[in-house]
Length: 312
Image (cartoon, rainbow, N blue to C red; front, side, top):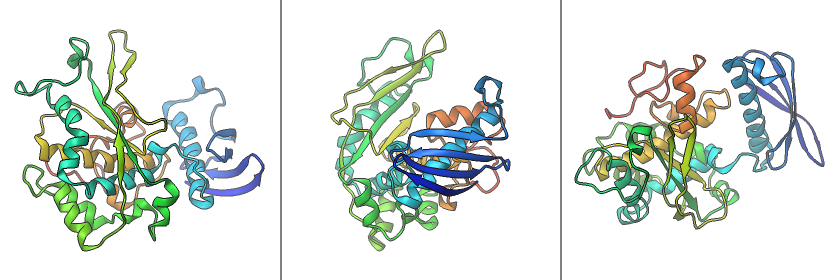
């Protein structure tokens, strides 16, 4: 993927994008990230006439154009939970979070995800009977006190680059079944090389997504005390992890979400985020059903250049 800003007016920017199939796009991106126009010469203009791969190429070009404006001009053109820098900021905050705070913020999410497989755990959410057969997925938004400009101003590099390959390798190869898990190792690494002070302001309640008998997605919303989008949103499937393992699971999910942000723009993520595992739920579906993507979500898949985390 290659992009170049070719114009600016009172409405936003014109961006020329050449995609991975060498198709040229001209995309108008508003200052807040809205796509105001999109011309291209390689795919059908009518969406129903496109293949999945062609449709993905159109979407990738749009996401990459918005990302290019964000990086080159500093406008907040990406929605918060789809901005890899925001997700990285949340990951940094989680790495420095005290264990007591982790339990305070995420105990409900942990108990709900393990209640499907642990008879000794009572599910804290009152959900429809039989939902465990409908493939539930649980989301929880995480909100930082700092805004994006503050996050980026505190760092020499973009937040997504502040956690280097060595740190990610240590985190994803640790034994998550012991006290020496993702968070304790992360804290030790950051103590050796302080990065920034980021603070979690709060979290949403737990939202539940599942597929009903007709095949439609249904969402049961949890409480949310904020009137803005979260900086990142955990998206977790049922598991049987104990609490140390669950903390690893949350961190791995955010690492894989950062990966998905880049894959969704048609570019390889930075080397430290080339990790296999489940990230964003919508991309998990694409990796499973679309032939144009490897199985990035499958930690047992053989994807050149990508590594699995510790055995799950």
